[in-house]
Image (cartoon, rainbow, N blue to C red):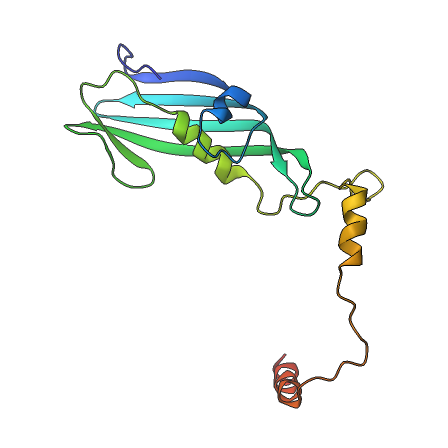
Length: 170
């Protein structure tokens, strides 16, 4: 993102993050996506604020059936850019760039923000009837490997005593 020649005030930049963008990162967790990133750069004397708004769909692998599906993501993040004699990351949200730099590389920040916006559990969403849209064949296979619980399971009496203490305190 070119910053030289920009005066003080607000400046907006838009980026489309697609297959080519995600492929540029080694071992990328995402191969396919249609994401729009808008960066509002607020430039003031000696400091810049980058406000990222990232929204779109990315393809992920289902944790349950291992089939790919698209999930929506949205995130807004903020970075502060200071100018100085070196280029370094001062902390998670403050970056120092050399005062002679004419550009800021924002691609890796956008990639990190997309990864952080992914859901923890990546499971196919249910359809309108409330049924899983996971691969039916894989769900059948998983069901055959499910551990069947016996109703008359013998428990360790020490745990039973602890359960009694817990129930009294609730």
